[in-house]
Length: 272
Image (cartoon, rainbow, N blue to C red):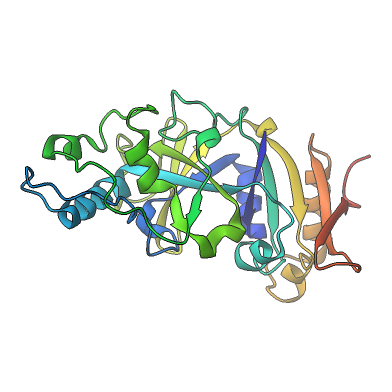
């Protein structure tokens, strides 16, 4: 299965230089309602209120796990506008099996279980309140487990219906044992590398080169030359030519004149 990631051209360059996918902590994502859909029922037997447990769970989940956001659709015009640098960026298609993003033994949520649930209302008072002991276990040796999946699903996989256009699929990994810490600087540990993007940490997980299967170039990708001055024209052509020589499919996105859709055609940079 191939899933897709929208990004800037600069980010795509970094991925080709060091093949990896980036995991982000919950509170660094752009939705302020992340990890607020637990819907714990109130219990007379517990000293903890629903609000107390919800806040504590959010705190525990936020820094102990990393989230990779992917999508099923590489030709979504809104996604290009919001996450593809206003059609000047790139979409990369990853083979999730080769990238080990479907491995239930190494993912808290593997991609085949990571489809976002979009709803008009949050779950209400339907989840049993967790004990202090269970709360402290969050961030421990947690692997994918169907028995514990309901709590994890409420933490990571519920979003408002307004986000439905993203068709998001998530992968969640445990980053609690990585030696970096949230505020500690950049570094490397085994297959993980920590960097900072706009002041926020990004935990980059190494993937094999051949996990990259498709690349879509934005409609306005050459504006990286004329507008941003990040690259000279010949430099951009050389980079795209080098991508076209790899064992992947390289596409150029264009508006379909007969609809409001984008279409993708083989790029002139693709090695025949």
